[in-house]
Length: 198
Picture 1 (cartoon, rainbow, N blue to C red):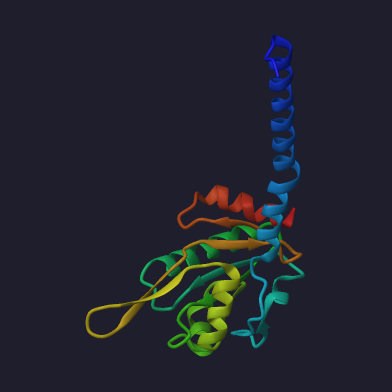
Picture 2: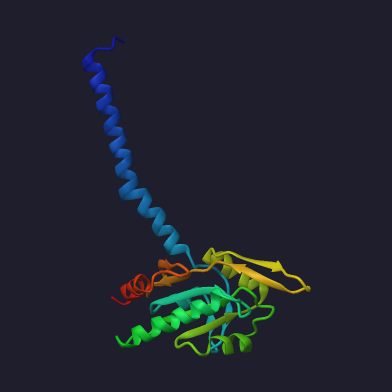
């Protein structure tokens, strides 16, 4: 086949058309489907945990009202108490609008965080429910929410826990909306939360 300006132009045009079709397929079909599948799958699983308000925490708990889920532990030196302080501020701001966010504090350290210990730990923040359970069930939840948690030995034979430090926001259908990062600007965090109630 002889390359002429006409055949080269046709080949370039055909290549551009294919590239545009692939790009459109990514933008309108594949990328939203991938994002949708992650958002729809997060928090879904066969875990059954115990909540400090006497209820059971399962994937169905996230349905019915906007929720926030945070993984931590009561011996946490900084991230968890700071995050609970942030949650208290969010709840104060929401109360002015007549709203309250359901917040679930799921322990990554069930060996020490019994239902009573966890209940006492979160009791000072409105709307926060502690969640614990057996090690196996907690591990299932950790996988279902795709968070990180790892036991780290410390001097003297004790241990601490490394864990993810973000709050996951879920809409009333139990679908992941977006996360709030640790230390995120308070105004930005509140805008994300208010969007759930909008």
